[in-house]
Image (cartoon, rainbow, N blue to C red; front, side):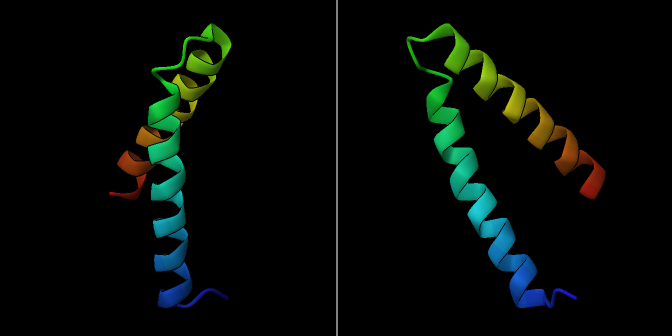
Length: 51
């Protein structure tokens, strides 16, 4: 089972990955932008559920 420190580390790592994904939204490659957009939408939906 995960303890609080593990959960906080997972949140931190997800935030780092999400920052990289936001940068990909500015890519010149349409597929990269679309994939990044889908990840952002999924992350935002998950964030709403966790609230």
